[in-house]
Image (cartoon, rainbow, N blue to C red; front, side, top):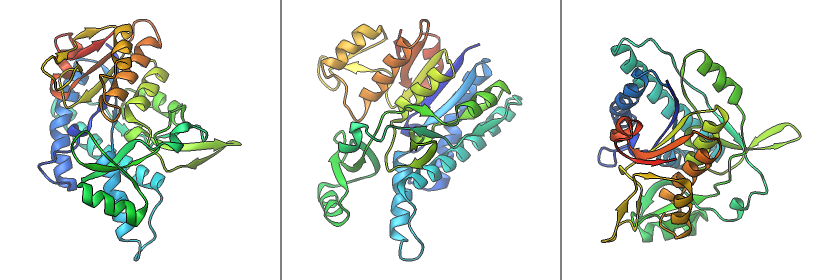
Length: 311
């Protein structure tokens, strides 16, 4: 039996072709959890993390549009809302799926805070995309009207970006450990968790987004996980991606992976944080393993039959 942290990518929570309603999200999640249940059914202890970019972006928009009627909530509160919403859907769907299989295992969401450094240079260089995609013209208008920083994201359009500081300490870590000891499936650090700054023992939320893959790596280390699985839209990490000489990576060591990072093979807004999280986790303790693959290949990847395995 292994202790496994599984970081869900956006495609595991939302299908861009099916709209952004709660019903559509729950429908996707009900399919997603079948793959998670397969891993749990094999006897593994599973901790689930997830992104929240589109969801928190829509919550912010809803707050802004309704601000003439009711006060808009700050970004950290919107992040907490997204954790609760997505966690609710995952724990409901996964609980149902486990019961169908005769597995009596509680599923619990922990709304999680993570301490960041207020002097983190990321606050001076926002890079983390949130919310929906816009055309170049729409992005320019939003920038002019609201002062948001908008950048082109992986050829898919323009998105708002905010600061993405490094995760330092998970506030609810002991709660998560206690739930795991009681044989719960735990959903935590959703969306990278709520970033907070600690001063004289007091926590205050800040407008930022912690990368969910790096937060997942922090959590995986702190709970002494054996494996970190980072799920994304592709089966393998590739070098020379999109070019005729593209090569998919299967088993790779951290030294080679760092070389590929230095050569600039991985996009900062997409694959790079996944690769860095995998490298950090594997190097944090002998015997640890990181896997980057698609949701559909996760179970095979655990058997060494698919995905990119970093050792």
